[in-house]
Amino acid sequence: MADAVETLLEIEQIKQLKYRYFRAIDCHDWALFETCIAEDVTTALDSGKYAFSGRASFVEGLRGLMDRPTLLSKHQGHHPEIELVAPDRARGSWYLEDHVIDTENGWMVHGTAFYQDEYVKRVGAWQIFSTGYRRVFETVTAPIPEQFKVISCWFGLPE
Image (cartoon, rainbow, N blue to C red; front, top):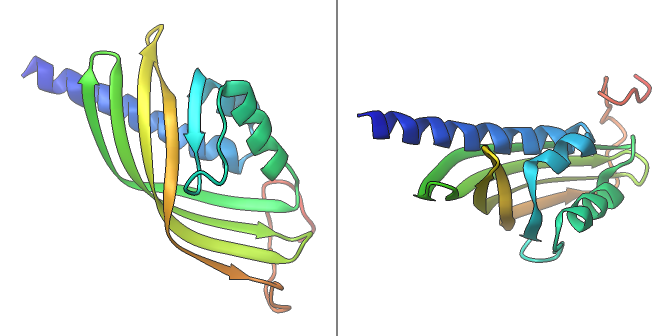
């Protein structure tokens, strides 16, 4: 029974890691984002459209794509399937729902995808070692309809 409890605790730590990853992206908290990923991370986001090798490349690449106060996003990971494959290795699948609003350029994206991750535990903490997703669907609205209003947001856009 202790092994089952320990396994569940490790899986919970991985779930919290992925939740932090999404929160860091949506809050543009690049220092927090950096703590979520391994130094030697590899990525293939959107079926490889956004591929990065190494932590610095991934952080700077995502920051370059998303770090504007006029870009608002929601990333939610649902239905995790996580398997420990070794004491310091795991893999997981997540169902993603994301919504991105670019108020400056006048478009919105809403979509879903399946993330495939690999995790590594180093110095007692889980990190994302490999990550990527393939879209199930994506809808794009452009221009943003005139009646669409952003009431308030984290980054202080006008209400």
